[in-house]
Image (cartoon, rainbow, N blue to C red; front, side, top):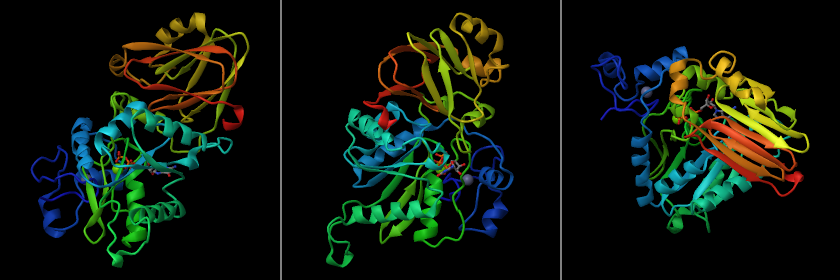
Length: 384
Ligand SMILES: Nc1nc2c(ncn2[C@@H]2O[C@H](COP(=O)(O)OP(=O)(O)OP(=O)(O)O)[C@@H](O)[C@H]2O)c(=O)[nH]1
Ligand SMILES: [Mg+2]
Ligand SMILES: [Zn+2]
């Protein structure tokens, strides 16, 4: 069975417009290593196109990991924090423990103390009966961080003596990289390939779009064991399931995020494009700091005018969504009410998070009913 080395898909030579197409003469010229047309276009022309959402199929495949003694490395970033995702991870890994890589730290403002995310990961893991070995923070684009991950993997494999000659039973065999789409799994895999397997280039296709990797990609790590890159999970609770590439380009941060802070009075509303509405009610002013892509438009208005502002401006000033068809996909709304009296972070899956300073207040969030919105409290301002 021939597979594309860039995305893992089983290739075909008959249908140029369908996934996995490779011209026959490419396979004849390079029988062992070739890229499908989609990978070729992404790699050479930065081409953007999405395959149909195959998330359910990927999940079925990932669920086989639970029957192995495996090390599961779960990658997350601030745009993809969700309880549902951790529930999916649990379904896939069974009793295997997870090592969490909190990636893309280079995008975050320097004033943000990332250590607080450890609490969040631990909380979501505990909620879903997952055992976290450790959470490492960094950027898998950096060799030094990837070297740290590799040495962690080695230590975990032979915890007592790192000595294969003594025939100590390793604590796991294959190692899987799993996570939501776009968190950097293939970027990490490429770096591991270069450091451990001496590959000269980035073999696996990476991109700023969702669903770049389409099937498992296995590389030999040693003797009989593999390191395996996997397709990203796109949860129904993530905006990526519903939005077009044009909209996702706005939500997916590629550059250093500038914190945007608003001092809100009671009865003021902030729109995150036309995707999320946040209303604030309280006796004192509150600082709301947004950790979202710089390109996402934030609009402040009075709560009493908010409905009218939305109806008049959605798909125009309030974007994404960009079209009425795209808006129709996210038209069923839910409103969640959060009472806060401590510094609080509210995560919106696929977008990022909002930090509220200490004030006794009520925050009302309205968004598409499927989207995960999680509130995490902090005990004191020092952690924030
Ligand atoms: N700033 C920054 N960007 C990163 C980092 N790691 C990955 N990226 C970028 O994030 C985007 C997605 O990376 P991929 O490695 O393709 O992500 P993936 O998890 O394999 O995505 P899927 O294959 O869709 O599941 C690319 O544009 C990467 O360059 C990082 O540490 N910092
Ligand atoms: Mg990938
Ligand atoms: Zn491919």
